[in-house]
Image: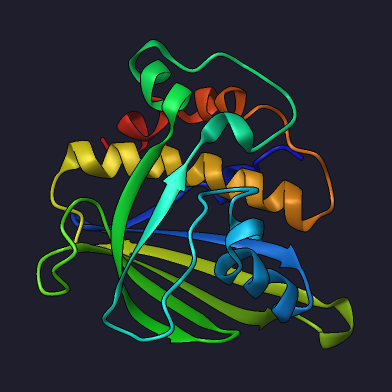
Length: 188
């Protein structure tokens, strides 16, 4: 799987980016990669979602565990990759199997934090069993944060695409390196 040019994020305004991926269904299968901690850990981060909107939860990132293939982490991320990284989020909406929204970054205040929304909808002819995943990251505070999350989401969504298609992904850091710095030029 290689990411076609259309797989890049769209910058919809100075504080919002959006990705679209078409994944094999059914929609419940794709939803499980968002909701289930073990399945989410295969492409993003591990951590149980709370049962109630408004509650906080933690996710632990360990990028070197996203694939059985190994690649060294970039110098600036070696320590984080070695020990992992845990972040706290706040659940803002959960509507199985169609919508998941949570805060993102160090701020969990729903009034000020950046937020991530996953929206799942059927795509095309129902007999094709395809699902459109739309990821919208909004309230991004500045360009540096936008560049970081754009490359990060791109790499993580590539890992999700491999997993949803039943393929073993390459090493996460090899995928990440393909997109490191790309968005600086795309958002110029």
